Image (cartoon, rainbow, N blue to C red):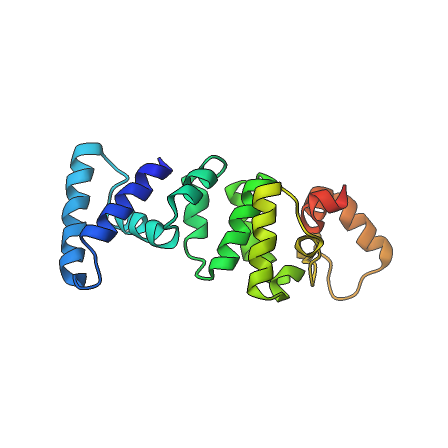
Length: 188
């Protein structure tokens, strides 16, 4: 399905919605949406077709899409699409693939700004690319992908002042979430 959506997006992006054809492209997308919806049912409305075009534009490398689609669903890609920074998007995609994140986990990590809190985000772009490539190719995560600044422990429900015992009890009550925030491999 991911490959199909990428192919539809590619064809429409290249043939119909080119740089010189914005108004024409919008009308054609609407018409194609009506035809596909009539022939194949729901899932091809105008916003869906627009997402397919955007998907192709954000992920133009088909080999990368095929590789990622073996572990990620279309829903994963829909969460990744709004991320405009390519390095950040690649980071989340690699983490999803290697850590077997569900869509819910990806949303939570994105919402908690995981990328921005990791040490890797403070490195030069070329080093980030290399570490993400290493994660994808060798499934080896650098230390900078583990360490976070700061750790988000809001789920513990602690207020402004609390004792060490309160912290311990909250961590034990929310152990799974705590381990996921620290990082499953790091906590293990």
